[in-house]
Length: 639
Image 1 (cartoon, rainbow, N blue to C red):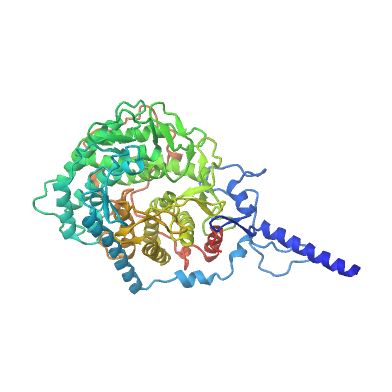
Image 2: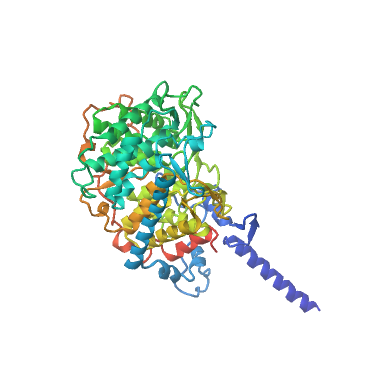
């Protein structure tokens, strides 16, 4: 009997040791909480992401950080250790190395016939939403696609800012969609839509709207459509008509003038978040605004100033950007997400790449690309370096080495310490911005992480908790950010993987969001319940980027001119006339604000495209090696 006890004891001991090792490698059992979301006991991932164990390497000046406290080495080529040596250490990533060819088989090619089918599918998706809007909703702002009705401002509940910040009773969806019609090659409908806007739209309305939303959706679209109408190069063919007398530009100017009161009576120069289009800033207006809302006006306001020769609009927008920039942390170089426009005090101290901050960074770079102002480039490069130093977690290189993939977390703007364990869907824009900055390698990894979340839920939850592997906020309003980054990465790499991503997104939208008269917001990404709302950006951005992804021969891709997209997806040409101005420098730098901004006295690069600039040795069958793709899929709970 004694030998039986010994055997049983040895078996129990071995099982216990195996269990401990299993946990240590981050492959522990899943505990189910509520909606069938696995909560993994992944000590390895938490250590890598928080990086707060003793002995961690100090943060350096490099953008990417080495992973402290863990040193994973590749397994030795030999299978047996020499006498007196420790056996070769097993690579952490070897756990994800099995069945790696499945990713190559799935994503390695994309036939032209399938590409043409997806292009038609994206076009049909746009027209199903657009035609139903025109049939059931116009001239109201949005379409309720379930009830097939129009939607305007919530006049009975002025505090409903979720609706009233966006809807101003000015045919929002029609205006926001103008240049998408040209992208799809429908010149006839574009001209009809322009005439409808000229004949029916007025901004003399008792509507209180958010300055940021009116700027990017309405002002930006009017300016873009005007430029495309009058472009002598005719990238989309001869789209003008003889009776056009710059009416869209006049409408844009009128709207911008109605937004100007937001910049008055603020001690910092940072604008109020909302204005009434008829009466100016409401008397009960709050003094708090988000960084993105106040700092993402420069592209549209700057173009308008240069089109009409009036520096006022660019001046107020650039003053707001400078004011925010000068209030960044001296310790980290980071900005917060909410600020008091009168005191200059940070109300929200979270610094991240998502809601409240996203387009601030985007417009620093895009303003430089458009206007050629070195100040904008210097601010962007300094901000980007601070982001890399304080928000980035994971291994140093996307496609090499050990450790977790790169992930950008939300941190305290003053200390750089992690504030929470969620990321939001708006952050999915950042890989596209990294492509514009030439950091394609890092963009590949971050995009793959968001795509893995999409694969799991068939949508992007508004917030996703990377520690719990579960959504924190469950709705998906048909946002375009992941599609935008997918399109830009495909333009940069021409890798068929991104066509597969686009196809997955298209098919998910068709399956999960399509309703009787359009495409509806997903209220719950797990059970796929819906809300009766189709936001204008679905037609102006989501459908546009999906169509362009599969349309290799689009005039945008064949034109000799180069174009950039605003944060609402509106097309603006990169032209010499936007780098010329009829006034002296708006800010003579008397405060020396940029003296400590320019990194290493580095000169801005010439404004060239970063498309097709992946080094030949990095052109893998997949943009991200199979082992890393499988690792990311595991980290979001796909297996």
